Image 1 (cartoon, helix red, strand yellow):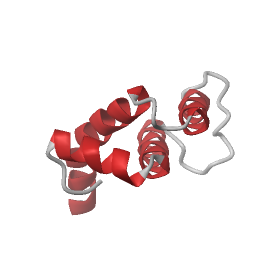
Image 2 (cartoon, rainbow, N blue to C red; image 1 turned 90 degrees about the vertical axis):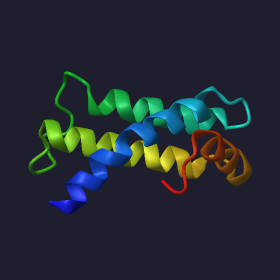
Image 3 (cartoon, rainbow, N blue to C red; image 1 turned 45 degrees about the vertical axis):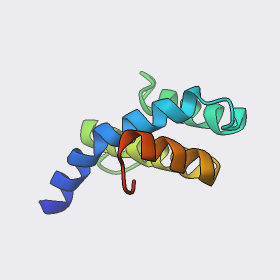
Image 4 (cartoon, one colour; image 1 turned 180 degrees about the vertical axis):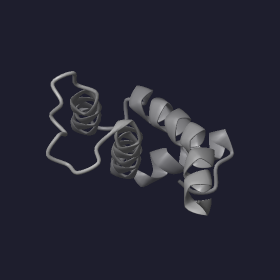
Length: 92
């Protein structure tokens, strides 16, 4: 239960950091395309995630967070640190 609370507490920061990194030209186009493609795939109306047991609405949100964290980690370290400092974040 505590993990879910931490997860939900960190979600807004993860979204804001991802948005700032997405708009930053120093982050590779490849990382941006992969992240957007994965999020589109997750929310696709074609139920492409049916092969994953328990992939309901909550699982889709968890998958989006995983994609965003992977995108954040794909950004150059100095760019990520700069945006985290601007947002007052310690760690994602």
